[in-house]
Each structure stands twice: as structure tokens, then as C-alpha cells.
Image 1: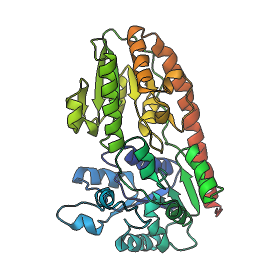
Image 2: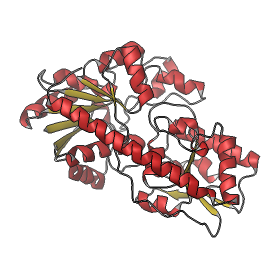
Image 3: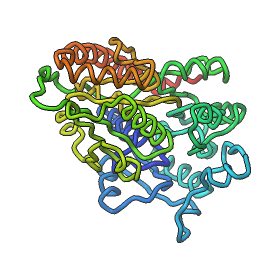
Image 4: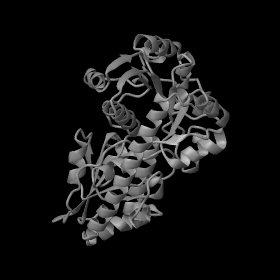
Length: 388
């Protein structure tokens, strides 16, 4: 099939979980033998090298800019105004005519057999897709009342959030709806009546199994995070917890990588900032254990999946493992204090790394196989003309 993938976020640099999601989906579709064409809606500026990387990822790519990105300040309509007015976004508030026109044109020019849209708030482009072309929305997250979910954990409003009825209206524009984890698929079924919503999580194949580590010096503990309000709040809480527990010691080398390193609070902590990491495999190979202190939120925590896919022992909170079948107590530490105690236990007795790694290996192998099987099933339905 010729599949048109519409994305508002770039795939490169792959410094955020949503970018990794889009990238791995495109790679999986191409690996399954399909030609994948891309329509990038230009919500974030992309440098020349990264745009070239995107062109290499797709079989064909068209990039367009929304009207607000043509201004000198290049700021998309964001939550700042809504935070002041208390307004909730309408489904199509981030839509623009050039995107629908481009989608309609490409469907004809590239003889598209299916259209795959990322995010419900980009469903506006489906209004221009011919009725005989199967359509898919890859939801990434639940956006109905997302601002209320964030508020419960003390995180500021960010990105997109809307009302339940608006999300339902957007999802009903598609023939197939993908949830990124089972809890959200259940919500789509119960709240939106989408009885055939399918779960397809992060599409990666696990790396080769690695031998259990026996650290000869301080335990290398890594945290990989993009710079967004949820990760900033998680890091603030973690740093406070580490100071209270007296866990900044010579026993543990706390390291942080990713865009969050640019934030001032990181440099005020005792974490060692590594900056942006181009070689993820190298980063995980250097770590004895990886942590994810995520609290609250929805969606799937891509950084948890990636750590396990790279065969790195993971210590995490329950919220960091939503959508994953945790098989070790330290995969779902009930509190940040419990997570810190788990890391301290590994520093005291690194022999525990072997059991933690083995549990992660078994879990992620089963998880990966299930996601690719779900993708194969969906593609078979699309090819057969089955609709919700």
C-alpha cells in the first residue's frame, strides 16, 4: 500500500517521545513492505540536517508551514492564552486550510491507499480525504480533559487539551483508531463508543540481550528526559526526594541526558548533565540502571519502553509503566521515596541488577511481539477494507 502519514511534529532530532513514536511507526510500515509518504505540518522548526533526515525516513515528504510559523516569532497557538482565559481548545483550533489542501492533493498525486494521522487534533485533514480511502488516527494520548489530569499532579497546562465531546467528534472522523496503551483503548470504547479501538504501543525490536553488570565503581544511574512541564515537575520532585534521603553520595553517579539538561534546575542539582544524546544505544550501554520518576499524566512513557528495549535495568514508578506488564517490584515503586530506596539497594548490592534485568528482558520481548502483531492485524484490516 501507499500510506500517507500526517504528522505535526518532526521525527528528527528524535529528542521527544512523540517524535520517536512517529519515527518508529514509519520504520515499521516500511519494513512491512509499504511505501510511506509523509506530510509534515510544520508545528516545530526543523533545521536543514534534520529535514534531510526526515526525507530519508520517508519514501516521499512534503513539508508545509502553518500560518503562525510564517511570523517572525514563529510561535504556534499554545496554552499561554488559554491559561489566562481558562478556555479549553476546540478540536480544530490548530487546523489550517493549507494542510487539508495538501492532504487532498497528495491523496491523488501519490495514489494513496490509506491515510494515517497523528493526534486527534490533526483529524481536520481527514475532512479532505476521499471517502473510499481508509483512514487511521494514531491518538498518542487522551486529550479530553487532559488539563484536569495534569492539574491533579500539580503540572501546568501544556500542549493540547479539549472536551470529551470534541475528542469523540475527532475520533469519529477516522475508520480506525489506535490507542497507545490498553487503558486508553478501554476509555475510547467506553466513553466514545469506539468498540474496535486497537492498542499499538511503541514499535521497536529489543536489542541483543546483554550480560548482567557488575559495577566496579559508583552505580551509574541515568535519566533521559525531554524538556516539558511533566518532566520538569518529575525532576523537581525527584531532586527534592534525593536531598531528603541523602542519596547524593559517592555510591551513585546520578546522570541526566536529553533536552531537560538545558533547564537551570538540573544544574542546581547533583545530577551530572550529559546534554543531548545522539547515540541512544551508547547511552544505555553506559548505564548500570535507568530511572523513570514519572508521576501522573497519560499516554505511554516512551523512555521506559526504550530503556527496556535497550536491555537496561529499569527502576520506575507505576505511572512510568502504564501500558507495560511490570514483572519486578522495582518496575512499579509506589512512591519516589521507594524508587530512591530501590536504587540505593542496587548501589549497596549490585547483584540485584541481574534479576531486575531478567524481568525487564522477559517483559519487553513479549511486549514487542504483541505490538508488531497488532500492527499486522490493523494493516490486514485496512487492506481488506474493514472499517469500524
